[in-house]
Amino acid sequence: MSMVPRFKDKVAIVTGAAGGIGLATAVRLGQEGATLVLVDLHPRPLHDAQAAVLKAGAAGASVSICDVSSESQVEASVTEAVRQHGRLDVVVNNAGLMSFKPLEQFTGEDWNRILGVDLLGAFFFTKQAFMRMTAGGAIVNVASIHAVRTTPHVAPYAAAKAALLSLTRSTAIEGRGRGIRCNAVLPGAVETPMLRTNPEVRGGVEHIDPSELAQPAEIAAAIAYLASGDASIVQGASLVVDGGRLSEL
Picture 1 (cartoon, rainbow, N blue to C red):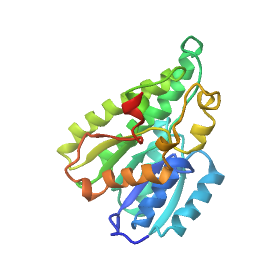
Picture 2: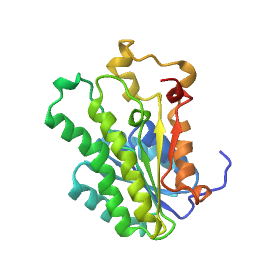
Picture 3: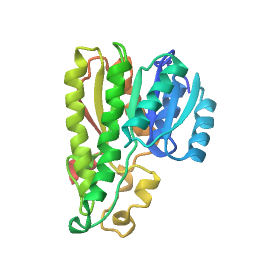
Picture 4: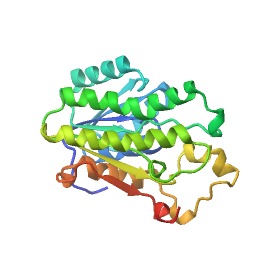
């Protein structure tokens, strides 16, 4: 792929990097010259991802096995990333967890687990970014169209993604004076394991129009734009990348 290396000499952390949107984003940033820190819970796919990112042309790639819902693990992960690579320029908060139950069957424990990954994980990495990034840094939060319009049986996920948009706005407001930008992408249906294991999709409750189905690389392209200097004036935005799905729900 021939392109201007927008992330040359930059270090980027991508969470949930072992597959799906996270891996595609890491590959895209690597193609554009970034050094990657790949964060995930699962060692084997994480090391496979590392190989894929290096093959794509990344300046470097390290892995960090981390539960993003643990503040201490996040702090350790970012500390090690900066120790290894000397700086931090981009954070992509992509790690996500989704569960499917009628509202009355969810427990407080279910909510805490999903909010811990989908919302607090992004906060923990954002906090660390504020403490370690210099002016010119960028944070991109991977939300979902569920933040705006949703379907049955995913209440904690939809609530977490809606709150993530609020966190994005707060981060943008407080980051502006530091020279740190924060924006969100709202994917629709994306060809990932999360989509294909969705019981609402498998059971036909939620219909996916093939024309609206995105590939992970297409979401990664939007993330790369928001993380790059091309989006230098974009702050606190919510970019819908869903093939028009939201406009029809």
